[in-house]
Length: 109
Image 1 (cartoon, rainbow, N blue to C red):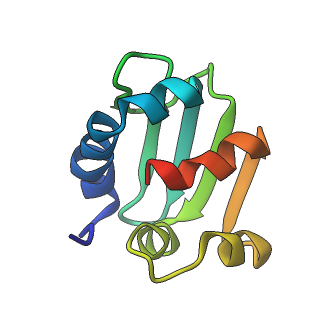
Image 2: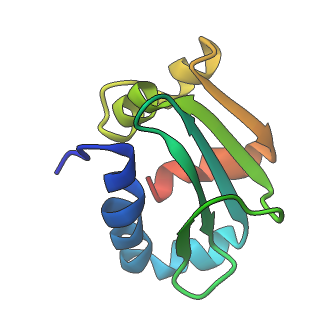
């Protein structure tokens, strides 16, 4: 089912994916920071160091990988309308920190 908003991704879709993949969460073992700009954006952290993963609104100082995108581009990536690699190459998706962790994001998005 497609995410309707960025908030929907972090409040419904992401927690469900994390809950369904505890082995992947444990293997990742790091904190992600998402900074989504635009009128329907916001800041969220995804903590894969906690059992089962924890998604929280706001920022996390301990993030090892930070993802920056506009609300429209992020939704297109999550809903499969925009290839994440192409978004990165064209500057629509910006990653700071551990690129290896960024590659693992596809497993939980």
